Image (tube, rainbow, N blue to C red; front, side, top):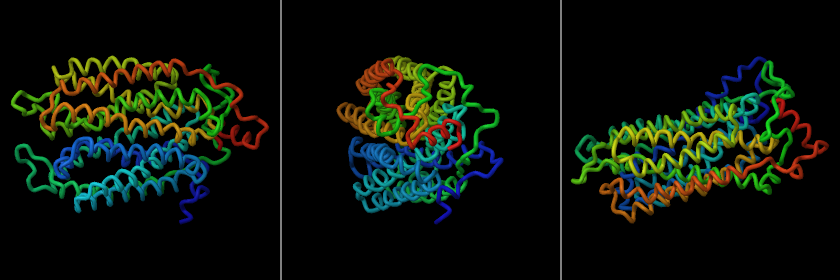
Length: 467
């Protein structure tokens, strides 16, 4: 297994850095399947005779484990390199699907919690952070663009997984195509087996093709000393241990938590939600299950595109300003969705698309925001610790939405009015995040690493894109 070692991944002279984004996407497109869980959520509710909240817990556990594993393993990933991290991620992520399939076939919901939730969630966390710091080293001249490329695939995972899952469920279930069809538990179990094996192969390809830059590498024509100084961009460095002692870290934590909570609760309920918003008095929705699955894929485009476009834009306008857009304009759009979204499918889809693009943009911009505030030394480990906000949001978002919906009625009978309390709660969270972002200021010099410390050579090399 020596091919997994970091020194076996050092790129040779003349290596094209644009070959690295596809390697990162190979992992992120696979683990981004977590955003397509709503496609088979109703099927699991019926199969296990469970509530929306009980099935939503599977998703929440996965997101909790994502944040916790990223926080715990962030330093390990930086030390051992992206190839080993991506390999471990592939094993855990695929293993989670296989154990989850066993839980479905045997009717044991707890195995879904353990497999897809815990084990798969660990694969999510390690896979999520493994290419991020690597791409930032390859693109020190455009950190926002780099993180956007790294994280874009995670948002786009449902774009592939949603239609693929819908097609496979129909293929595996002989009852597909009948009126009011909901996939059987056997079909969902076979879906899990198929996805687990396919994702394992594709993620291993990403691990094999990833490379890190040589110690003396930097982009052609890039001179860090000539980069224009900005008030919110430090030239100093803060360790991961010191970063969590600063108010800036926790303000950004609140910002990410609020932005993620507002979006993740909707994403987790995306397919049933659009059907409920356009349910007629006789209980039949104007939106079919197939169209709802396509809507999940469309949201994936918004999620993916937002991660790239908004993060790249932050290189021009600044991280703090772009988060003001995510949170401030996002709150306004949530109000419009709550009050008027049920009046027009076009308006509903347009509002949801933009909202989810802000959600994705918030994720992709976060690593660059941390780089601006804390420098590049241990930014991967700091990013891992920040993702505990995602863990908390993974509980809060679905819990808020599913709890409100469970109190409003039963799945398949809900209407747009049932979603208003949850959506307006999200508005309040976005306002809190907006205020937290306004309070972010440069980090005090007392937290900076001394230039004479043993870490100083690493700091300087990282800034030059040479680490």
